[in-house]
Length: 621
Image 1 (cartoon, rainbow, N blue to C red):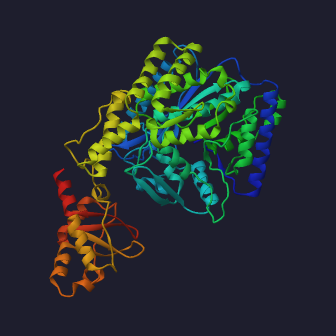
Image 2: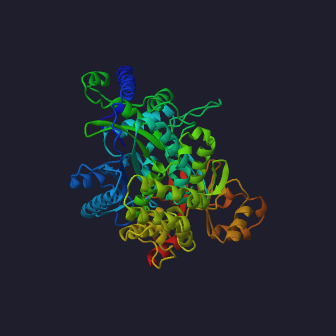
Image 3: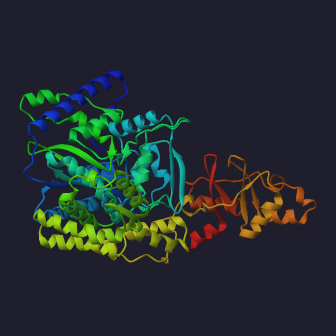
């Protein structure tokens, strides 16, 4: 999440001072480019691993602060939510056994994190979106304590001037309003860095944009959010909407999202990319900066460009330009931010090798991408990949390809060529790109999740299916199998594993009736759908009463039933519970009051219903 000392840029004085440093940073960068003050005789790779902590019941574990303290390792740092951590891997030179080195360190640090997490009754998991995360874990109290995180939340909200409205349509639909940026915490990724020579930066950046769609389509691993089946890589839409500072109005106006793929090819130098972002995005974070970058240059030092890096870190390009310092020398990198975490560590390293192979294997004719492809085709490929994954049809150099064909015929051979050209060990090339080939022919992480989830949903409640899915992901990761070898899940024998709250067993797909509807309509619906309880709501969806099978029979036996409304026959004294109510308490309420169901309310909103049938299934489970 970047600089932890950042604060809100919410005063005139703070903004003015920070802006001065930002402009000086740009000028310093231009001078360094003009004078060749960048490392260009070596290429390195690096990566960041975001991970989830889950408890022994496979739900988010808010123990990141304790785990981080016990780890006492500078490779680990916090993330936005209290159930996430990040690992920063050491950069290595791109040659020989570099991918094996990255893999070894990643496995070692993940094993260390898993061992420490056990002390706090937690487990580690890498996945694009944790299947068992619920809206409860997106409340503001789950944000990691720290100046930067709260500043980010406050400034994004201030620029929006309203709560966050998320709307995503896939096989299912998610339509919800939220009061913080915590939905961003659902996203975990494996961020890959490739050092790029300054003189080739813009051409490389445009090529990174070009291949983003096909690469993402093969690497999708986030099809589920809050039990809804959405995009193959739901993170793409979720990240944009959860960090959106744009406002809606009756006027039609163009506004840039802070999470962006971009709208055009880049040109000039990396300084021009940064200038476009300064011109196009408001400053939302600032910090105190002691050393002016121009003064540092004059003294012969390498400036840190702190203001530029902080502003750049608050603009979420899926391919992000990065300035850094290593071994006393400045360098430039492209950071690939769109690849999800998981499905396994081995899959991640294979993704890394595939992407780097494509970046280094770029054919000469693709050096000037604006002459080869329309940028809108490139952007459309990225959106299609996020929506439909490996099933997407891609527009590539003027022709349409099934993604599977484009990958196997064009891009996989190109990746082999690229890795050979930079001297990567033949054994690693063959081993890692074979995993890519298996995934092209088999299934991706998102395809595995969807198939498994659908199988289990045939006979299980959504929460049970999500628990089983999360447990299986963890077990497959421990075995370090690539996802193409994961067996698709069937319905397990055990249900309601780790269920303890009403929200875990309640039904959410409800048949409801308005209080002003005819009673005959309600009784017919109950007969048609074979349901014994029907909540009654008003025009705003607030609970007003309850109809039961007994009410329905009484209505049928009476006279002049054709004129009765639901309000005439419903019971108004309804006992309700909340999603966080314990199942045992719900059972006691049903027994004490001799009732067969409990509507579930979140505030005034009806969100579910728990019946005696649900309770019996829980007891049997």
